[in-house]
Image (cartoon, rainbow, N blue to C red; front, side, top):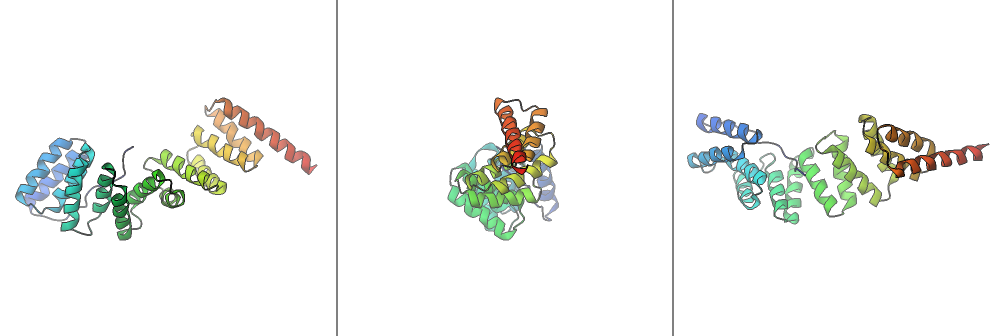
Amino acid sequence: MEKSTVGFQMKRRPNNLEELEDRAERLLDSGRISAAEKILKRMLTLDENCVGAHFNLTRVYKRKGAFAQAILHGKRTIELSPRETNASLNLGIAYEGVGDTKRAAACYRKELSRDLLNLPALWNFGQLLFEQHRWKQASRCLQRCFDLGYRHEEEETLWKLGRCYFEMNDVRSFIAAYERYANERPDSSWAAANLGRALLHAKEFQRAGVWLLRAKRLGARSKDVDEDIQAAKKGAGMVRRKRV
């Protein structure tokens, strides 16, 4: 799974460094990581305190899996520019890479204290909390991303959000999240099936049947779906008989 991050917001610099940084960022964004690394190192020979070079070298080494080096440049970025946008986010991802989840969480919190609407930081923090089975805290982060339309790894985000609500025994929130997604993505068979099962669990048999049948039409052909459809029909029939 790719972590969520964004690039450096460039400030004005002497022309040579600015041009080099533009080139490095284009190379990095196009996947030519080693070529970008060479230019960024050259920038440090021209100015060892160049914030953009340290920031983007954090990104380079993070992408290469060289997390110890990413941490060094990430810390240097913050030393030089304590409120640099996304610097704490990138450092947090690097700390996660070496398994230091405590420092990673602190970095995500720091980024969010600077900007509550930094959705990549919120998403990464939610993922970290999820892996720690901190369901309530994780659900708050992931729900916020979902509500604000952040679409990075959206299927995984929805599945993990649903898992949080399942573990919290909050079927209403589970249904609300899946119903919104299933309406936005009407071709998603797995979302329709999960929504149908949640409605079945909530004893909303008629609505459950509608979504389960949609899931089957979209290609969800597992035995479980067929059994759930029959259970929804049976439940709806029992409700009708009680009303008569």
